Image (cartoon, rainbow, N blue to C red; front, side, top):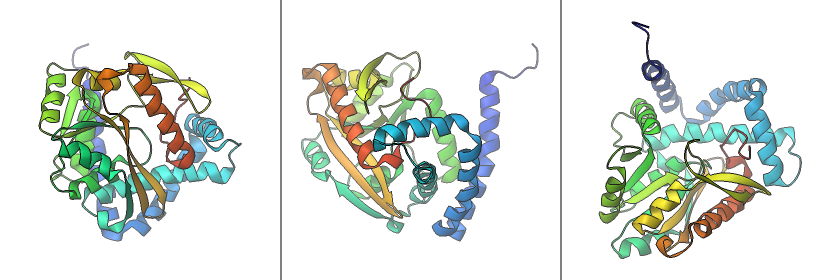
Length: 294
């Protein structure tokens, strides 16, 4: 129909409309401070907790598996609060206020060993905790260069949101799904970049493998692990866990030193097993608010 906006145009309009709201929220947080910002989060948490039945059901199902018992109402509220707190802290971290936080780093030697050999690696994260605290601490380490890999649509949205939070922030994002993506990843690796991506969620059209996770089979994307095997670079688990008020724990663990030389499923199972370990260790950091096992 003539004059009708396409789906992409509507998405662009929504993002443009959201940008001023994000900038207002950022201005408030940066001016009034984190403690007051947390108070402002309470109504938002309460709204989604009360009026979002699907996410609430997903939270209940996940917490039951991660905690090994039926979660209390306090457990479920804490899950929402942890998510909201990480979003709030992201604004501060993106504006170079990492000194506000007490960050403990585990596994720095894993990254140092890879960098000493002059090569890059893959940092496989998940929708668990805060990726931003990992990047913020990484920016403070000498000569660490990080690039992010995500699907083109997600890359566009991420850049729009990040520009609204901090226009001066230079993002190194490689968009998948277009010609030359794999070559761009390879080139960054050759330059010593750490290539970060979230390996727990995929597009519906992407090939997936069912792997036991918290007691039931769940689908995980094959693509990230195939990419690591094809390019022959180490795979390192990367998580930034929220451990309490202003406290974060960053974890780096080697998942596979030579992914090209082992079965793809072995690498995937090792990743999922360690992800399960940290979901039990820090259960409220899980931010996939949908039925992950469906």
